[in-house]
Image: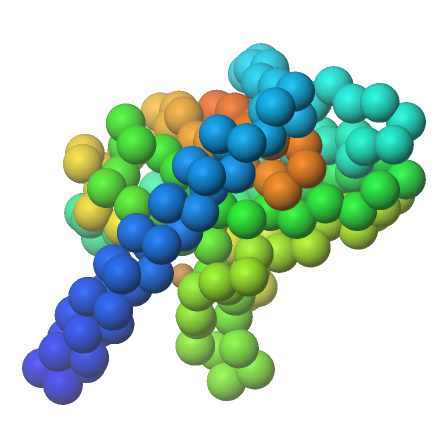
Length: 180
Ligand code: CU
């Protein structure tokens, strides 16, 4: 237990540096993104408007299982891209909710690590963040969320810019079946 705690603290500390780099990177992208940084918000579905030559991003099925720990939470969602151009989820922020948010992948042996290059969103395809796989990790959570709450998060895409999502908090065991 002690060893594990120490290790996870060290892990967290190391990730702080990565998160800072990720944030700086996304700010730079936003600054020079021009008209690519359009934003649109709605409770259930969020779509970034796009031309034919751009990805068409839609976020569905977002949820956060009510976390067991006070300062850490996970989040899941599906990013659909109906455009003919691929995109990339480069980072996630949720500044009102947590000190930092990261995108994690789960390795074959069940450990998770930060996806520092982001996740590809294929053209005419989808990126699925789901239990047991890739996910959003919220660290330094400011107030432990409860079922029924909604958490405002921002997904940052290489081409589609920022997409805001209200992520509902569900029961700890919630695990929807995704059909496509
Ligand atoms: Cu994680």
